[in-house]
Amino acid sequence: MRVLLVDDHALFRAGLASLLKAWGFEVVGQAGDGSEATARARELRPDLIFMDIRMPRHNGLEATRAIKAEWPDIKIVMLTVSDDEQDLFEAVKSGAEGYLLKNLREEEFADLVDRMRRGEPVMSPGLAKKLLGEFARLQEGGRRADSESGLTDREREVLERVARGATNREIAAALVISENTVNFHMGNILGKLHLRNRAQVVAWALEHGLIRKAST
Image (cartoon, rainbow, N blue to C red):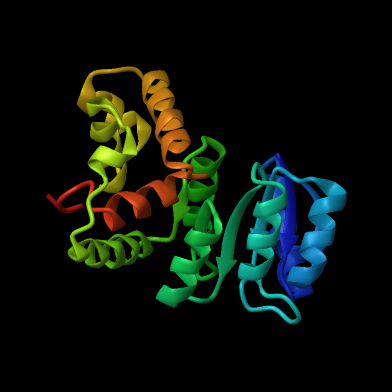
C-alpha cells in the first residue's frame, strides 16, 4: 500500500514514516500542508493518505474535499489531535475513511491500521459513539427515505447493522450469509444512495430515519 503523509510537523512525519515502513507500507511522499497535499496526491497517486487537520494555508478538511473530488478512490484517514465533534463530522462528510487521534498507543494504532488494510473504516475509540449520537439527533426531524432509497429488504438489514457498528464478518454471521455477499450488498447500497464509503452510509441511514435507533 502506497502512502502519503500530510502533517505540518516534519519530526512527526519522520516518526510515522519509520513506523509504517516497519509494518510493510511504502511511504511514497510527504507534505506539510493541505495545498501541498493536493499537489503531491496529483503527482504520486497514493493508495492511502494520513492527513492532519490543523495546518497552514489549506487545512486537512479542505484538502480532503479537493482530493476526493478528483480522485475518489484514494483512501484518506485523518490523523489529528482534534477530538472536536465538528471536525469529526466534517471529515466524514468530506469523504474520509477514518479518523484517528494522535494520542493512540502504538498497539492501538497497529490494530486500527490492520483493520484499515482489510478495508474496514477506522476510528479512535469513543468517536464512533459521538458520530452515531449526532446523526441520531438528526433523525428527529422525521424524514424517512424507505420508498425513495430503492433498497431491498436484505440491503436494509445490512444497512441497519452497519449503522450499529457491526463489521462485515459480524453481519455475515448474523444474517447467515458469506462476507462476499455482504460486500455485494454494500456495493449496491453505496451505488443506490450515491455514497462513497461506509461512514457516509451510517450518516445517511440515521439522518434519513431509515433505522429507528442505532442502539436498539
